[in-house]
Image 1 (cartoon, each protein chain N blue to C red):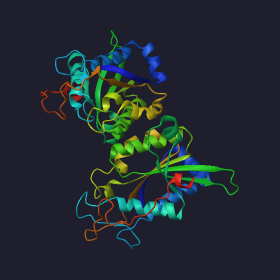
Image 2: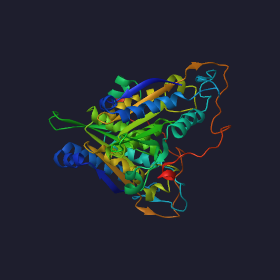
Image 3: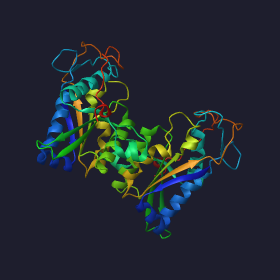
Image 4: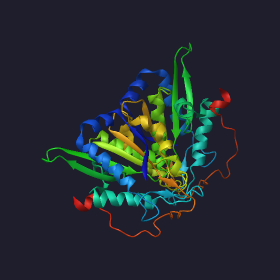
Length: 212
Length: 212
């Protein structure tokens, strides 16, 4: 997979230039999405483009998550205090990691949402991350989602970078990044990605609460 | 129907106190939602509470819209320039009206979304209105949605005031109001509201573009 389009607020651009921990976080997320390959065992990601809306998205997300969790030590399902404790409503952030300086004195917290729902679901992800930033529970927010060129071959109604793009400006003034990923290649003979979790191996996800 | 819960940003509270046009807009929206009655011909709104998720929501919205359009001269489907022209993506605002001072020199524009989708759809409505405010295409934004006490008897997964409430703070600093409406009475013998548009008379909605 490759990173095709990116949006960064001015605040995020400055932080990436000045803060090595947040820069590391950003690099890890890009590295992880690029680890998603297809077909299994390939070194790049090739999507079957013979028919629109035909490929599942779960295995794409799963390969990225495995890399984030197993190799880069991110955690899944990090509750925001503002939602879980204060308001008593609303689910956790998809993926989360705390980056510490060598002396342990500085900690930067990064929240990531890998958006595979419809466009309105992407708005919820955006607002959840904004709430986390406003309440200073995270220092950087990142949304991952496919660009239209790839998204049109994925599960019906999956939200794309371009669909959410009109609303990116709502994140100005905050440390916010949106990454649009795309297939490395398009080929109408490669295996179609099954929808849902069919054929995927069970694994235990590394949730935040299991380790903290 | 009655207004049961309300959220107003500090900006909105100040505007309602100081600006007679925006205060008029706010009163009209509250008046319109309170015009929703059930069963047909009643003077109040009584919901059948014999079973959760059993009542449709379209007729509730329709009665409110008819009052807004026919009696109070609001328009439907007002495109935001930022979405329709600049970004070329994204639908219009549900309901819209321009309030003019007697001498015609002052115009205040109000956008309203009557939210009957799921919670993520409510996030999209919120963000669309925020974009309209940010771009100064509207002067006041209002979201209408049921409170949980009523919502639990309506179409499955309809978003409620309480579900969106954790995110209200994202609108601070803007002229934003959220109104949670509730039934006047609960009765397990009153007629169940049919789902979808069944049994509703066709009518031409007053869209913005038809009149401007």
